[in-house]
Structures are given as structure tokens and as C-alpha cells.
Length: 516
Image (cartoon, rainbow, N blue to C red):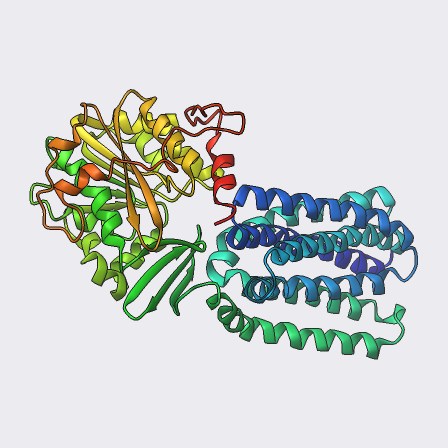
């Protein structure tokens, strides 16, 4: 090959690697969009990856029909990937805000399949072009595929560790689309002698470039206005952390925290939740010196615990440092948590709760478990017999634990499965539920090494809601939320413990909440 052919073949290899990076970023971006907007991360990632790969296969098959004008075909494929992929996140938020229910999911799956199909056409075209230039077919195929697979690794790492946490989903989509467009423009220039109607193609590139740059600088602001419609009140803070989307809203004094679109608390009634979460186990425990809080990164549970003067140390374990940092610095949260995470008695660990308990060698008088609902695989492990066994093993004799356990009204089977799972560890349990206007009826499971007699529990601290007399009533469940659930065949439903090997809770949770 002459020098010009060598130069062009190198461009093809580099182009294959770069478009592969862009392709894998779009693939995982679509999964992240589905997880955030549609929920059930495992399901959404499974569907988007499957659709993307299926699209690639169909695209590769269709590429057999492209035997001529390989370069200009590649260029226009990149144009289409840039336009469709670039506007994907922006349009997804718009669909969620304005389109009929269910259309956002259909839109996401269609976009995923389309971009996958276009990506599948790219590589065969580049391989043919490398062969046309004079590179031996086996060498051209191997090198293009190497560039593609290596680019896939780079793309995945870039999205996970830079693009998503630093740029967010809207800007990331436009940024990656600009790279696709840049590859198309470079290829268009280097192969310009083979291409007719250059003015038309360049004009198209300019128009697409203007749209993408406009989206890069202004798309996030517009998408923010779309996303605002997903929330009842005005958004006052938004952050895309490495783990989740954090949103604070406020209206007429009511501050609300959302994680990945799920409400965590409303300042108007959070005292009902946190008083029930904290004070019953504190009343049951024989001593309070050492307390462990799993979750609770907003600092509200810690606020209640610090009311007890005999608490010497609170260890708070929350995975996301962005949440705990927000609780330490944001004046809206500081007003609510009273600066609890800044107290010298509180030590914050940004770790996975399961891994923390596996490695910890300390024992605790009280353990408060204030974790998100088990709506995906990573959270499900924190609702298993194995996890609660670790909790039991770190609980001192005479100690007590309290576990938030979702709603016994909206997710009855889920609540009683969690209760059964805790009981399967050999701990004594008691079931509580409380009405919280912003959440509805919410359930808790208290556990102890010692038998629990609610009638003997005394709430010794001044509270807004909870009293010793009221506590007994919180153990009474109505017919529509009791564990005596009868199926269509008239048989009483039995509850099996949720385990790592048999994670039966996720499906129950998804089924229970699909209409709420």
C-alpha cells in the first residue's frame, strides 16, 4: 500500500474505535435513562442492552446491501446516530412530562433499537472500506474488531466514572453525539476526493452541529423545565451523583427529597416516620451508648438519636457521599436535621451496608435500618436473611433494631415477607405501621434478641407525634394490610424468607407498586 492508503486505513481503525466508544456510551445511557425514569434498573438495563444488541445484529445483516459509496453511507449513518442519540435524553424527559403514560417507555425502546441498528451497520462498512483500500480482509476485520471491542471498554468506563456523574444524562448525550459528528466530518474531509456533492454533505454537518452544540449548552436547562413537571413542587437543588439523581423541592415551607424520582421525605410529616423509626427501639434497648444507622444519609434519624444524652457514638453508613455531604452543607437540610451529621458523636462511612457489616467487628446497642425500598438487585441483598443475620450478629444482648419495611397497604406481601425474613434469623420481632400523609400507611419491623412487650415501652423524649399510649395502636393492622392474605383459590398465602439465592422480594415489589 502507498502512504495515502496507509493513512486512510489508520483513519478507519481509529474511526471504528471512536464510534464504538460512542455506541457503548449510548447503550448504557439508555439503560440509565430507563432505570431513572421507568424504575427497576435490572429490568431496564436488560431490555435496553438486549434491544441494542438485537438492533446491531439486524443492522449488520442489512449492511450486506451496502456495497457501493461506503464512505458517504458511513458518514450519513454517523449523522443519524448523532441526531437521534444526541436528542435521546432530552426527548425522553419531554416525553415523560407531556406524552401519555407508557409512551416514554415505547420511545426509549424504539430509540435504543434504532441506534443499535445504525451502530451495527458501521463496522461491516468500515471493514469493507479497509479491504477496498488494499488491506488484507482478515487483517482489516481483526483490526477493526479490536478497535471496536477496546473502544467498548473505554466507553463504559467513561460513562460510569466521568460523563454520568460530571455531565448528567442530557449533556452526555449531546457531547457524545458531537463526537460522532466529528468522526463523520473527519472521514468526510479525508475521503473528499471520492465524494460528490460535498457542499450538500458539509451543509448537513453544519446544521446538525449547530443543533447539537445548542443542545449541549441549552438542552439541560430545557430538560430541567421538563423534569420539573415530574415533581409536585419547584426544584431547588439537583445533582447527578455516581449512584443516583438527587432532587430537593420546596413549596410553601415543605421541603422534599427525591432519589431517582422516589420520595424520601416531606418536611411537613417526616417527624411521624423518623419518630417511629427511632424511639421504639431506643425504648426497647437496655442501653444506648453505641448506635448504628444503615442508610439515613439525610441526617434525620441521627437527629432523633441525638436527643438521648447517653448516646456516645453514632456510626452512620450511607453509600452515596453526595447525599451525606448535602445533609452537611445544604441549609434546607441543615434546618431539618439540626446539623446532626456535624455532631462530634456521629461518624459517617460512605460504604455499602452489606460489606460494612461483613467487615465490622463492633457490636451495637441499637441498629436503625433506613434503606431505600428493595426495587432492584443491589438493594434486594439488603433485605435478605443473610443481611439480617449480619444485623443480628452485630446486635448486643439487650439491643434492638428497627427496619423500614415499605407499605403494608400498597405492598402487603412485600411487607410481610420482610417481616418473615427478619424472624427467620431467630430474632424476636414486632410489627408497626404509621400513617404518613406524604407516603400513605408505612410499615416497620422491630427486632430484638429479647422478647418485645410493646405495653412496657416508654417514649421518654418529647415528640411531635409519638407517645407511649399511641405506640400499642401502631401494632394493630387492618384487614386489608394484615398478613392473612387469601389468594384466588381461597388459600392463605405463606411467606418465604427472602434470600440471596432465592430473591423472591423483587418480583413482589414490582408487582405491588406498578399501579402506584
